[in-house]
Length: 101
Image 1 (cartoon, helix red, strand yellow):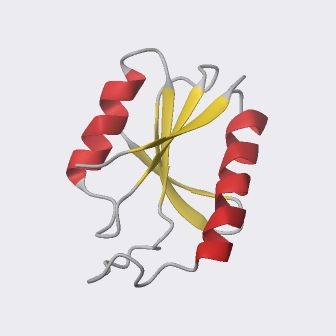
Image 2: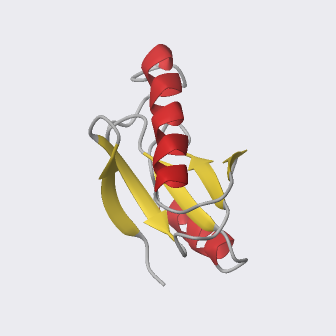
């Protein structure tokens, strides 16, 4: 099963993998963006009977410093939209996991 690029909420780019009816895990990227390694982590999560979704909160930008490029207030709103998307498209539960590599 591969990762699918989608758009959710108010034009939020995201990457999704897993059965829509499975409990969902929101995987958050680090400040250097959505990487292939992060997508592989999402695939691994989906193999454990979860649906994984990575919202691209930086909109494809890569920061040089941790706080660069992210509007924190907007990111929180987009995470709420991410949960709403997951619930409205079939996931009975949606939780978050922070990935640090």
